[in-house]
Every structure is written in structure tokens, then in C-alpha cells.
Length: 401
Ligand SMILES: C[S@@+](CC[C@H](N)C(=O)[O-])C[C@H]1O[C@@H](n2cnc3c(N)ncnc32)[C@H](O)[C@@H]1O
Image (cartoon, rainbow, N blue to C red):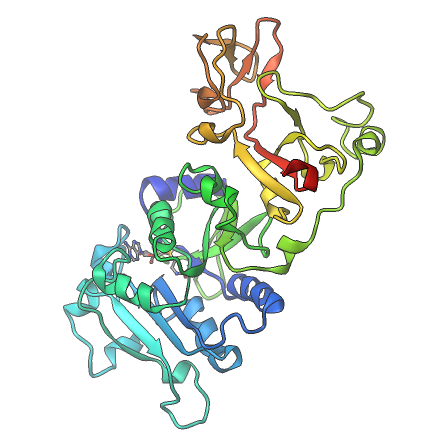
């Protein structure tokens, strides 16, 4: 399955997934729609790229004039430093250039910059890109690339999956605007969730479901399903759970979710888990109602609500505030983390795992040995914590302030 591809890749620290042009275009269009001048006068840095054929470089170089960019910088990582090396051959573009260096081509990163019309065609475009070898290997953590980060206004890329956390921390410490591709699971990381909660980062609008295809090197070893080779012999892999993480504003963040009242949901909801019930379930261990579907959030409930993580695809900070999440590592974000003595951990089939007593939310939602989520029951056999991860939210109203 496609998700297995990602975890396989993560384990093996294979990071060579290349983003398709239309994936980039759709997301950038959403920022431009919200603010047509979002890139005007800005220096855009595309780190962790392969500028000679990256679609990020192509997209921004082609649109340089239209966006009114001040400068485009894109950098690549030295082939010898990559986790996955495979079969490497410099492109003809590099080989035929007088600067070509047999040793540097594998040991050094490269930088491409675009600032002015060099060909005299009165346009600034891809033909005006200048390039040279970096002093180092192009590692985003190096001083050389940090300097470029500090020079930039906006950082855009699909960073290496195996270093996502580190990459995000690297951007956050720089206080720059950014838009990067990652996996939805990153929401639950303990160093990512607080940023989402504080509205310092959010999900981009253009991907909210399904999977996306990424190109991989032709000799990339893929054992799981979900890949194809096109008629030009290029290899693609489908990956689920992909999202843009950004701090660039967009229109969807300011569109409130259309919602029904609690009474109407209980009567008319399309979800059989809600329709016909007398009320929403409540958690036994904290003061909140369980809302298993984002479109079943009641418009008139003022208390805390536990909603699925996919709620973030629809989240408007004007409409809701985020209070916490149940994931391990985020337990201190949960409204109530009291200890319970009379609780047992059970597998999804209801079998006790042997753990009991003294549990806090910290232990909830772990994957059991069988890879499925365990959950907790109390001494009456009632489930006290959803088997699914939840985000806790509340309507943003005067009364909730
Ligand atoms: C997911 S790929 C994306 C490439 C390109 N941005 C795109 O989307 O088409 C991430 C790239 O980052 C490179 N990379 C891995 N570790 C890196 C590091 N420490 N510094 C810079 N680049 C790195 C990988 O070799 C890979 O080429």
C-alpha cells in the first residue's frame, strides 16, 4: 500500500521523491488568489531541490516576472551526501558547461539564482538562471545554506521526509514565511502540534484528501504496490496523507464551516453514528463531547469537542480555537490529564492487554503489537477514550473568551 511505501522509505531514509508541477501550481495559486502580491518584491528560496529539473525551480523561474519576484535561489544536495545514491550521472546541462567539475559534481551541492534578464529577450525566465557549485554539500543545516535562508523572505520545498521535523524547526527558528510538503501524521508530532494550536502554522488548501504521485529515481527499489512507469520510462509512486504545511494565508482559512445545530444533527445527520441518538457521546475522562465527523460539529455547542485530525483540512481560526490533542507527546495539551486507577487498556477486539491502573492520557492511542490502536475501558466496560486520535476544539465566541 502507498502508506507502506512512505514508512518503508522513512525507515530506509530514502528521500528522493520529486514533486509534480501541478501540485506546486495549485497550492501557489491559492496563496495568489488570497493575495496577488504575495511574492512581489520577495526573495524565494527553494532548498533541498534538484534545480536542473526540479518543478519548483521551473515553476518559479517561469513565473518570475508575473509574480514580481526580486530573486529566486534554489539549491541541491550533493549526490554523495544523499541517503539514497543509486545510479548518478550529471545532466548534459552540467556536463557541457565550462564549469563542470568531475569531483564537485558528486561531492558539492549546487546553487541556481535568478535576478535579471541575461539573455536580452526582455524577460526574466528559466534561460536566465545562473549556477555554480556550493562550497559545501548543500545540507540545509550548513552555515552556507542557513545564510541563504536568512536572506530569503519565503522558503518553499518538499523537504526530505526523513528530516521533516528538523527541517520545520530550521524554518521556524528563522521566522520566515514558508510552504512545505509533509505527511499529515506530522500534525501529531509533539514539536508540530503546538505550532498548529497557536496558529503559527496551518495546512495549505490544495490537498485535503486522497494521494499524490511523486516521481522517484528510475532505479529506486520499490517493493510495495502503488507505483507506475510512464511511457517515457519515468517511475512514479503514489503517497497518501500528503499535505502542505504553511504560514502563508489563504482564503479557505477564512471560510467558516457550514454547520447544523446539535438537535438537527441528531435528527438529520447523514452519519448513522449520530442520527437517531438522544445526544452526543461524552468522554468519561474529560469534559468534552465526541464528534466523530467534522461535518457533524454542532453549531450551537459551546463546550469542548473532540474532532478527527482531518478537521484541520477545514479549520478556520476565525470560527474555532484549538485547545489540545490526544496524541502521545501532546498529552499536556489535553484539557484534563488526571490519573485513573480503574482503567484497563484493551485492543480493538476488546481483549485486555494486561496494562491497568495509574494511566494517564499519555498512554492512550498507542499502536498495539498488532499495529492497531488500543483504547481504554473503565471498570464498567465503558470506553473512556476514543480509539482514534482527536483534536479538542471550541467555537470561538464572545462567551468562550
Ligand atoms: C523529497 S525530495 C524533494 C526534492 C524536490 N524539492 C522536489 O520536490 O522535487 C528531498 C530532497 O532533499 C534532499 N536532502 C536530503 N537530506 C538533505 C539535507 N540534509 N539537506 C539538503 N537536502 C537534503 C534529498 O536528497 C532529496 O533530493
